[in-house]
Image (cartoon, rainbow, N blue to C red; front, side, top):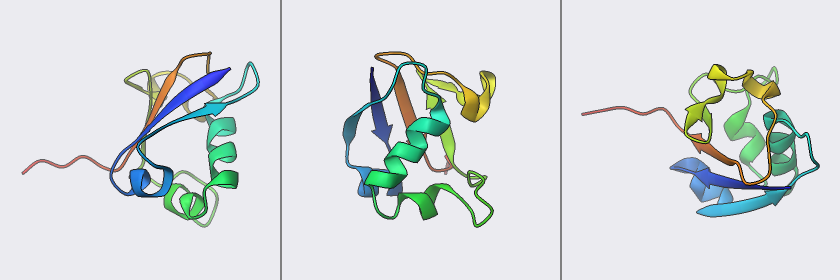
Length: 92
């Protein structure tokens, strides 16, 4: 299956603008992140802290909804899903 990735700010610098990743059917958000970290140097330290947890400031969305409204990192992905990786959003 193909999952579309939209990266913003510093994550776009690491990953590029819009990329597609091929994953096995039934893959989860965590599987996607693992795959991206293997192929993109610098992403792991940007996404994860020293204990292996996703950094508090990282926002992950599936089809424009926060993954926490699903099953977090265990959220199952489907062909054609869009996953967005964002830094914190601040107004001014």
